[in-house]
Length: 195
Image (cartoon, rainbow, N blue to C red; front, side):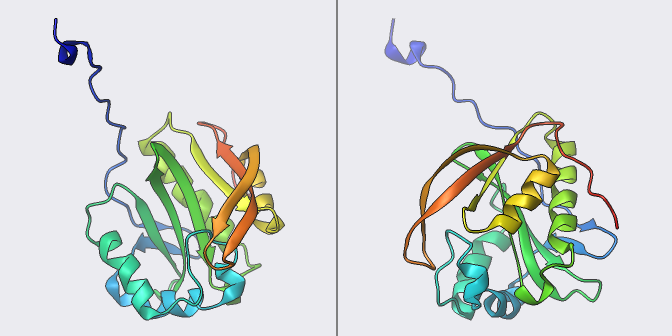
């Protein structure tokens, strides 16, 4: 008997299909466009935003935005990186669910001038609801830096639970940072309370 006969067949993870356009009460979540580069660069040139993101360098400029947008807009990735836009299609942030190391991960950021208005809660709830309809048995992983209690509160309100702590490298801070890992199990999304 040959060794190839004993090898397990490769199991490919189920995919959610192309990223949708999602409308909420105040926002539209849509696939990114190359023309979003200036708005992304403006938001991510703010250290108050990038310091809470692990993979975003500081300083961040328009070329960095384009370097990120080219593969994201190519349609070749299984991920759902969606632009958060207001009703006038002004790009104010990003919410994404991406496949990393065989797990689906939630990530998000918002231009600082739109903080504390409930936009991120609205956007995260909307993307998770839609993703869960396509991938109902799939847990969604995420995490926050330990010095970002607002993001941890948002995740806990939506049903995410802490699974561990560690340290990960933050490019913007150029150092290792304490990180709280979270997961949302299938069917555990808590409905967002509308004020």
